[in-house]
Each structure stands twice: as structure tokens, then as C-alpha cells.
Length: 171
Image 1: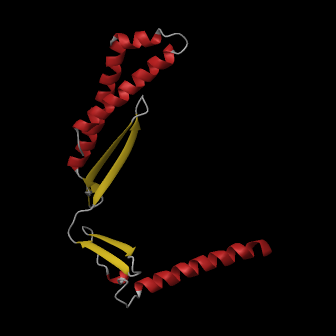
Image 2: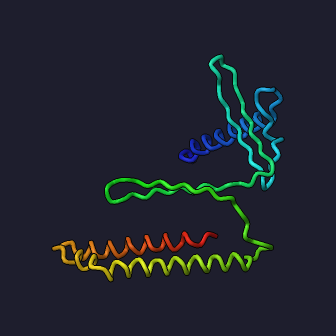
Image 3: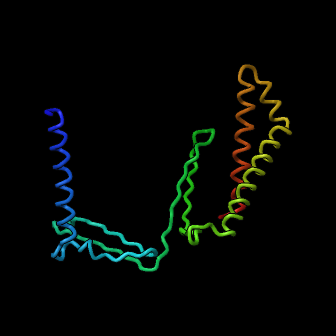
């Protein structure tokens, strides 16, 4: 019983402080803090609140609310190359809903099928290019690590071919 008292007390205090701060923010009646309970958002809107304290000590609140703006999704990926260099790619897509009445549309299913087919064909082409050229046999002739280097080159060529093939079909 004694060992459960302190964690229970801390948990209740944390929950209470969170509820108290949310209540204060949602029932704000002053002009300094916006009423968070009254921000209207829809499926195609975006809201953003930024708080900044000025040098004089005043609280500056910037409320950005865009109605009928499609939500965008940001994808970021980092790829490290051979020489320690890193490629950063960021893509921003407009989020769409391919589901109509809990069923996938036939166009979206065809797009998924085409993308998978393009990726597998690209992987086949990439691996066959490495194995058909003298690169694979040259790498496999390196003493001690040749078989690892050859397998790594084939795998990397397959991944590059898969990425190139997948870029041709955009779903």
C-alpha cells in the first residue's frame, strides 16, 4: 500500500494540473489569451496559434486560421551516401481521401497496382544491370570482401531501380 501512495499522488497531481490549465485556457475572458473553445475548424481548414513575449513583457498572440485550405502532408527523408554526404528530400502532398463509403475506388486500386508493378520492374532492371555488367564480377574478385561488396552493389542497384520505377507512378 505504501509503495503505491507516492505514484498515485503524483499522477493525480499531474492530471489535476493539466485539467486546471486547460480550463483556464478554454474559459479565457481577457483579450490577451484567445478563447480556444471557439476556434472553428473543419475538414479543410487549418489553425495555428503562436505565443511570443515582447521585450516590454506583453504577451503577443498570433492566430492564423485558414478556411477551405486543404491540409498538406509533409514527408521528409534523409539518405546517407558513400562519402558521408546526406541527401535531404522533402515532399509536400495535399491529403486526399481515396475511400468512398468505406470502399477503395477502382482508380486508386489501379494506381496502387501500377505503382507496385513499376517498383518490382525497376528492381529487376536495377539488379540485372549490375549482374550483367563487369561490375559484379570485378567486385567479387576482391579478396576477402568481394562476395559482400558484390551482394551490396546488387542490393543497392535494386533499391535505386525500385525508387526510379516508383517515381514514374504517382498515387
